Length: 378
Image (cartoon, rainbow, N blue to C red; front, top):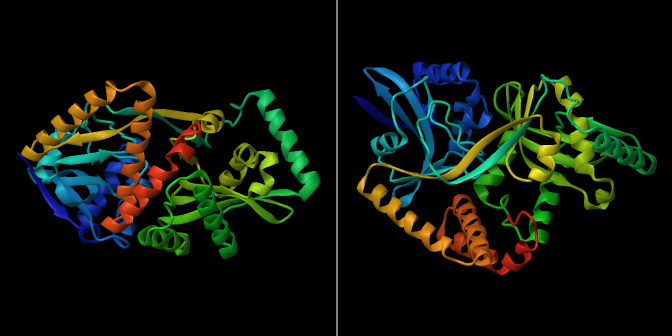
């Protein structure tokens, strides 16, 4: 019989901490910093709704599910929406289904972002498939087509001719660069009609706390491209060991003619390798450039799963009805509904009180015509 205990991340025993780490070592698919105990612990320092469901069978720990417990039986992956991956951290073949796991943890419905499911615990959840990309720096970086690489090198030469030598800084610990990175990203969200995901108090605290963290263990890391000593594009995210997962990409629009994002991704590999990074996880989204520069790809799924509870069964039926209704809409209206639904999910994950959620939803409705003009729409 499988049992479940709900424990705060900082209250895990030494043996439980070791079990989590052993599971990650045994299953390379789980090596993302976002699936680490350290990530759950740092999120718990800025939010008070973080719990870990610990599953045991005959006294043996078989799995961990870190999550945010929200009202109404809802749970989200810890750190959502910055948790680009979802997984049950487990031993090989844990012999439990996600419906059972959720029921034991008294969770009716669980939001899944970028599902990683090496042992089939989640089964087929339906949902939306997506392509997660990364740069595997243990492999030769010769996957970019010659013509494409030639064009990017031409842009880099033009950039150097007009603005000075192009260099990478990693890790970039310059506080002025950090503030510039945040400012540029917030300006971009305003211009494009996106929700300002850096505005919530807990998010700002998380970003600053990680940036100030020591170089050992989990920490925030910034990789900066400069031209003539001026920072023009910044990637910022979380690093643990030799894996880095950027969350934020921001650039100075004054340099947009030089396609700085392409120059950045074309040349960042050597700087990252010199800093000891072996995998640069670009995750999902913005596929028009990630597919071009990533040499590692895997299919992940976004969706929602349900516990075998009264509330879970009712939520599953309601979701099925909503899907059927959406499929009956004309294609354009269905697209609008899907985009608005994604925006609502993100706002609800970011904003923790009703007034801020309502403000975000109102801004989302007002910005929808603007967002529909963009190819990504999110």
